[in-house]
Length: 252
Image (cartoon, rainbow, N blue to C red; front, side, top):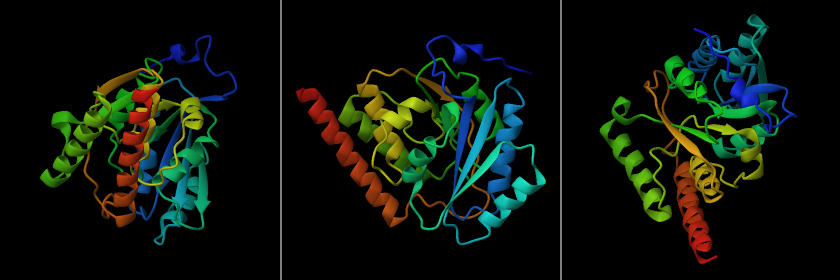
């Protein structure tokens, strides 16, 4: 199967971008997951007649992630892979926005380095590229995480929707954005709340979105960083910023 998404290059699109899509992979201690993550993107993009690149940001990993990345690049010179390195840990949100300024793609999509985004899910999201400003994945009945993780995730989504009046099904995950929007509306969030802040801000600017139901895999190696204290504090900060921005917008 091959898809030709000429619609993303229609008149009025950003002309300065030399390729169609940039995939951003955050990597912090993912030595066992980073290679299959990259391979999933490469395999998924075989279904499309699109130019793409992969930017991996190693966020000061203390395991062998960086060595694995360098070896992947050496053994696969045909992969459109760029490796960026932080000497100090900066956080997911910081790296997400920072790497958008390195991006050559008109569209920009996060694929987490823990290998939980399946090939099928990436194909489904890219298949809708150009249909809205934000292509937002959600798991629905496909969610495979523990009951506790489901409760936390759904409560987080419901809380943000209650604050903002939005009807978004999921505020995290591999949202496909227009790169221009990320650069222009970047937030100061460094942790896991960055995407919620960005989505809420874009919705206030009347940006369009499309929900896409995707499959989910469970992390096979290592542990999630979602419940680190720094990330919890960052999410709380993002909730405060969303609430403040929503109140200000309603008063204006």
